[in-house]
Every structure is written in structure tokens, then in C-alpha cells.
Image (cartoon, rainbow, N blue to C red; front, side, top):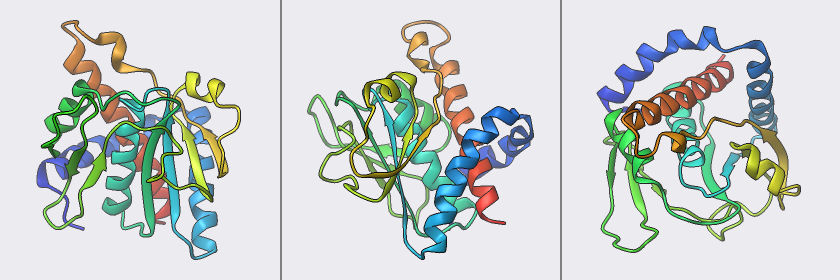
Length: 207
């Protein structure tokens, strides 16, 4: 699928980072690869719900980059979602990080928890992003892979109802940089880190 050229340029530049992923981290990512392969073997959509506590930063970045990388590597029948153990809002700093890397993100919603349309290609359906609990009615209720993107959510959610697989894939929370001079750099780096690991996953699935 035609992805915006700026995003494609970033992906091309970042693919060299795949080989720097540590073996123990690859072990976690390989669990996600195996889950998607299992879905493919059964000729069904691989539904992935990325979960963090507030569904504000890491889970959104993971949802977006997983879908982008699936399209970039030509891996079809992938549906990505995100949720939290509680709802807050898609954080502006995470939105800015994605915009800085080539995404078009728009909203006409003035509520405290706006819905955003995240576009990554002119002919690709946009992703609707907003903060919600992981079992929100618009997320899969059964037969999905729950990808836990933070330790807190993993510990607070001993049971993820309806999930057919649970994969712990924690990322460091970029919110530690909020309000500091390093804020934009930290968020962009976390987005790049997540993108690189999703590239690893879908590169395996494309082979």
C-alpha cells in the first residue's frame, strides 16, 4: 500500500536498527510473530489490542506502527487496536511525535478525550484513535492477542477477558520527559523504538 513518502523514508532509515534488537527482546517479539502466524494458519484476521494503563502514549504508538508495518511489509489481514485499564486521552506529545515522523492527524472533537483520524497514506483508511478501556465495545471482545505495552497494565490486569493470547512487551514510558527540554526528542525516540520492533515482527511474517 502507498504509505506517505516521509514515513517511508523514516522506515527505510530505521531498518538498520533491527539488527541491534537484543536477543531477549527478540524472544518477546517472536511471541507476537507466532501469534500472528497461528492466525494466518487458520485463515483468520490477526486482531491485536495493545494495552497500557491510560491508553495515552505507548499503546497508541504501538497500534499505529503495527498497522503501518503490516502494510509496509505486505502482511494482510491484520487489525490493530489499543486500550487501557482506564481511559484518559491520546496524549498531545505522542500525537506530535507521530506528526513529526510524517503522519497526518486531524480531529474536530473538542472534548476532553478527542477522537483523532491518523492517516499514513493517501489511499489507506485512516486509524481512529482515542483513549478507551481495552474491552471497549469497539475493540475485539474475543479471540484477539493482548499485547501489554507497560508493566503497570500487565500487573494490574491479571486476566485480560476474551484474549486468546497475552504477550508482555513493555516499553519505557516517554512521559518522564513531559515538560522538559528533552520532551520532543524522547517521544520521537520512543516512537522510533516501537516502529523498529514492529518492523522486526512484520519482516518475519513477510518471509
